[in-house]
Amino acid sequence: MQYKHHGGAIEGSMKVFQDAVRRKREMNKTEEEMATIVVTEYKEKNKRLPGYGHRIHTKDPRTLKLFQIASDLGIAGEYVRMAKAIENAIEQNSGKRLPINVDGAIATLLCEMNFPHELANAFFIIARIPGLVAHVYEEQTRMKPMRFINPKDHEYDGIPERKL
Image (cartoon, rainbow, N blue to C red):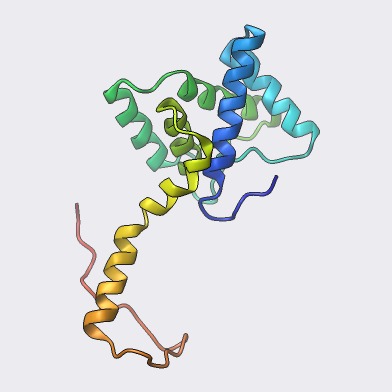
């Protein structure tokens, strides 16, 4: 199975977590036992587990925040435990710490809320709509229609970054 390079890991991660939790229940395993089985299966197939690893972060701050909010709201449960168990099993199996990335965290929480994996990309898109709307507004109010845009001749000159 191939995943898209940006945001596509949400659906794949949901499938991994849903399958792992289902199998854990059927086989009467702990999260740790099932996580070890899942990681071993992926390693034997030489496949990468979607939702883990990040080029920059050794602990993705977005994941930490999402899991904290889920905990505060009382929705962090079986899928969060499974995602963390898989993270630990990856490290035990490979000796490398691959953090749950933001796609994996979103997938985990969508599983906790019982969303089907087929809706994963919709949630990825929803998060980008405000930026798209702002871009369209800027184009409509500041630019001439049907103009040539040299891809090397531009710079951002909008509202400066602000602290939230």
